[in-house]
Image (tube, helix red, strand yellow):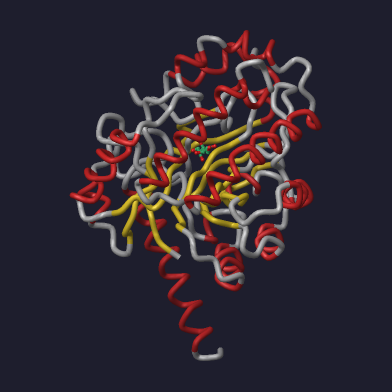
Length: 358
Ligand code: DNO
């Protein structure tokens, strides 16, 4: 296991590399070329410059999150093969720069969905939250507007204004795409990229859908154990793997997180760990990482990862906004640093107990 923090690059992130370097036990960052549009090629010189910047700060690039998959690939339009060729070129350039982990998602139109970005908790911290009632009451075209005022001047991942300006057309593109078709398009994409992944040993790690059910009538397929296993089987290659995101799969209280982890040995390449507190099955907020602050048993989750021999990076996922920090919602420094320290503590205890045969 390698402890990491997500970092959006010096142009976009309020958090600095030198600050990340001072979090005990954090040795790497998960980063990306944040101004690339889905479908564009990532050039080797751009990746190299990013890598040099991270290494100059005493850290390493532990993985990329995300090389985003274009809607043309998800829908399977005429532009799909060109976009896949571009994706392969990007992977090749990443491989040449010795980067071996790439996260991505296959969610139509909206990457993760939250209905509030600054819900106030009893301790005065603010967090991202979701209620199904709010989603049902809103016109999807207004979704971006409704949350953009709470973004603290940042651009949130998956909510790029360029794409959000075309939400209506995006919905139109998906009108004939059901879950089966989306799954077929995912398999088509994976089969096309597996050769380059094998050549450079690049582990692809799909991010689960967040929340783990359909929003605005759009199909969602990476939602539970059954679908994950189906996907693993459809392209049975170690480079076809998963980002195990507790906060996304965990939105569905029917998902048994430690059990899903144990069902995927060798295929979880990356882990996002955060906790949620539920007020009802469809009204939840992101809490502090500690088990006692939310619904998930973090000990059981980290133990399951340990037991399957998980070797990839973990990042403490979204944190609360605390201590007056102004940052991208979910991605401030302070609470994620607390999360990293907590998860490292769990890991050390589990590791020592296991080695002592306890
Ligand atoms: C939200 C993130 C997602 C994730 C993508 C992966 O904070 O977890 O935006 O990075 O879905 O492609």
